[in-house]
Image (cartoon, rainbow, N blue to C red; front, side, top):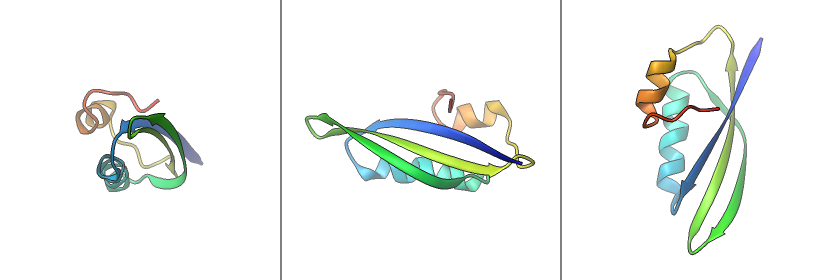
Length: 73
């Protein structure tokens, strides 16, 4: 069974997106797709669609610690 998550990141550069992708990959997530919205003034919102096998689970507290207290959705 596959589980999916979508993560939204508002950023002005690619470094933030790269960090979130690397952190997600470290706990078993694979990047499946992306979508980016232009917010103007050099700001964007990136949506990252990730998946992993359902048996690979991290605790919710670990996810919150890795992502500054935000739920992945």
